[in-house]
Length: 103
Image 1 (cartoon, helix red, strand yellow):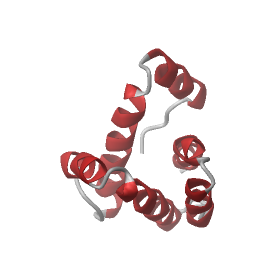
Image 2: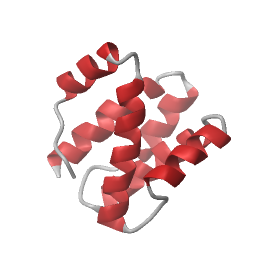
Image 3: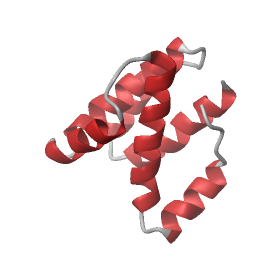
Image 4: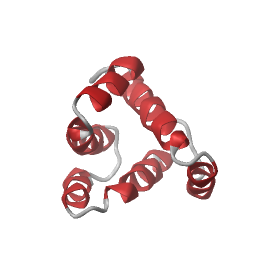
């Protein structure tokens, strides 16, 4: 998995008005798929996010946490799910990237 700076992620999200977050989401899924062989490819992942009006995103964040755990990171999948239901899901990409950086 590609190591990315959390600070740079925050800066790019602000400068691009959130477009970088969409790019990161797709790129992260592609990297997870390469590592685990599970889930959709980048374009299909993007389409699922759009066609389900973001509901797939809740499921994906939970499953991404499990896939990271399979690779040796701490399992924060329940935490990602809880954050989604308490309007804190904006924290999940940073936590996921932090976990991926530790691998």
